[in-house]
Length: 148
Image (cartoon, rainbow, N blue to C red):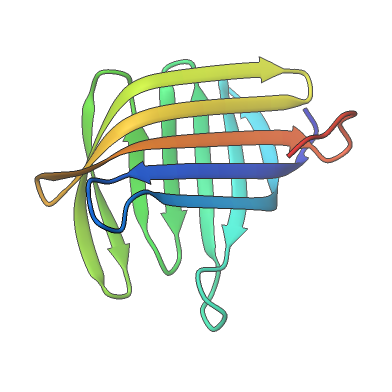
C-alpha cells in the first residue's frame, strides 16, 4: 500500500441512556507504513477550531490494535481479544480511567487497503458505560475503486 492514504474511522457507542447511541465518523488524509508484521497509521485530528491538532497513531496486527493520541487529548488504548486493558484518557477538562475489553477483532488486508473492526466493552472509573464498535479503514489515495 502507498504511504499517503485516506483513513476512514467509524465508531459507535451503544449506551443504555436516554441520549442513546453515540456515532462518530471521520475521513482524513494520513500516512501508512508496515514494519515488523504490523500496519501503522498516522493522522491529525482537530478537536476544536482554536487548539492544536491531536496526532493519532494506530498500530494494527493479527494480535490486536493500539491507539495512541497525543495533543489536546492523550491516551494509549490497547485492544486485545479476550483481555481487559486499562488506559487513562486525558483531556483539558480532566482524566478518565478507562477499561477496554475487546470481544471481537477482524482484520482484512489487501494490496491497496487495510481494515480493522473491533467490538469492545468500555468502562469508565470501574463502571461499564457502553458496548462499542470501531471500524478503521485505510486505502491508498490512488487505489482503483476507492470507496468511503
